[in-house]
Length: 296
Figure 1: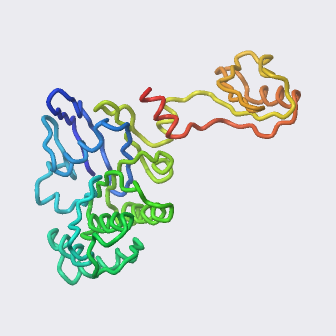
Figure 2 (figure 1 turned 30 degrees about the horizontal axis):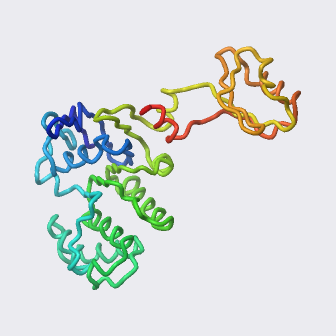
Figure 3 (figure 1 turned 135 degrees about the vertical axis):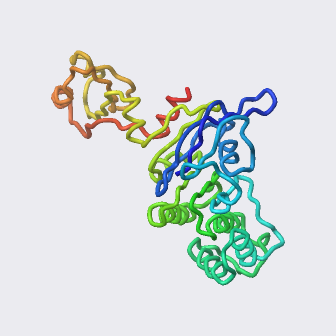
């Protein structure tokens, strides 16, 4: 697995990382989320050796990461880094060979990835001739072409259309869950992180504010919330239930927070007596809601 251990990094008076530690296990996809400037890109660049930490260590499989180890990593930076004048297929083959892949294998994998990622355009055309979305897919192919053991992606879904998002999601799931790679990516598309990732690391002001699976994050910030939609009920119909308080209401829909001793069935009985119950059930906070609560 990838381990980031107590990373610190400053830029002048700005503290970018203040003791960041987390793990990315092999065969797992971890979402790395936080506000702009929270430290995500700095942490990923240190993991890849693009930047040096002031303090702390990056480990792979329990050992310090050196140059030879990093050849087995794949990286997709937020600032796209392809050679615009170079031909698409030629560039992928070249980058694969830099990582030690034999030429014939590199060409086979490059052609396969261009098909898998649904890159539209002539593989013998220059990169600059492709649309921005297709250039982004080629950039991902460049990170994958040598079959990396670790894949680090900085905002890989930015600018992709829905079909592109689905294609990339499938590729990342296959890389992790079938090929056994450790995958970590940053994204502001929290609903996508929630759907795709096995774990989440939430960073704020250079520190890890929360981490774990979505269910673990929900449990750590658990509130006994229930959503009830009732037609024709009086306002504040729940007031007769001791220990029930409205968190928000909107046009017949109430989200109630129940005390530990309140039986939800009691609330349902009162709701039925007040009107026609359209829906009733516990509220599962989304990653976006958890994010807002953590960074507030």
